[in-house]
Every structure is written in structure tokens, then in C-alpha cells.
Length: 160
Image (cartoon, rainbow, N blue to C red):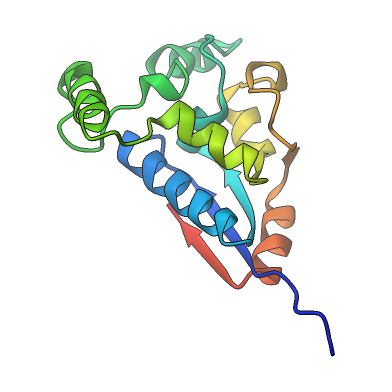
């Protein structure tokens, strides 16, 4: 009898919004817990999910992006109701009150379940985000060709 191959999912994470990071990580952990191979390709604002809480950028524009978008996953605001950080605090409290796993813990759970996290080389170059400002668990910095190859091998691909 032929051995059944594990199903595979590719998630392209372009958003750094709290709610979208939560959705991507929830789907990734659910899929990984269901014995699926899961990769997340972080690009542009989605890099927030794997950045350390440090400023980035060397040029004037790079430093501006680093300042405006600065911070790690804990600085993610909801796509609605941001209120200069009040929305992030409010949703954090609401999640804690309902015993819902927070973003940092959810990211760690995804990693513990074997989700592979990759970052977009081009986005990192444009936004002047060096590799050393990413969490150590990032599997690799790759190009779009790698993501496309993974997506072709996947049973489904999501763009968040």
C-alpha cells in the first residue's frame, strides 16, 4: 500500500495587522496540529511577525520606515480600532479575559508544531531590515521563486 503524503499549506503573510497576524498564526497552528506541513512566507508588513523589537534602516527612508513601522509582533495594531495603540491593548485584554492565546505564544506554538517561517529577501532589502533583526527561528531569507515552488507543492495557499 502506498504511503500517504502529508498535506501541505503555504501562507503568504503580507499584513502586520494584529487581527491578520492572529488569523495567519491560528490557521498555521491548526494545520500543523492536523499533521500538515506548513510554511509562512513573510513579506513587507508581515515581517513584523518575525522581527525583534529593534529599529531598522540605514538610509533616511529606511530609518523612516523603521521608525513608523518599528517594533515587533507586540506592536501590531488591529486593522480597525487601532486608536494609537489603545485597540492593541483592548484586544489584548479581551483575549486574555477569554483565555485566548496571544500573538507571541501563538507564534511560539506554531514554531513548536514545526511551522517553517521564511522571510522575503526583496522586502527586507527595500525596507532595510537586516537578518540579525529577525528572530532566530526564521528558517531562511528567500526569494519569491522559493515561495512559488512551495505554493505549487501545497494543497492550498493563503494570502493574508
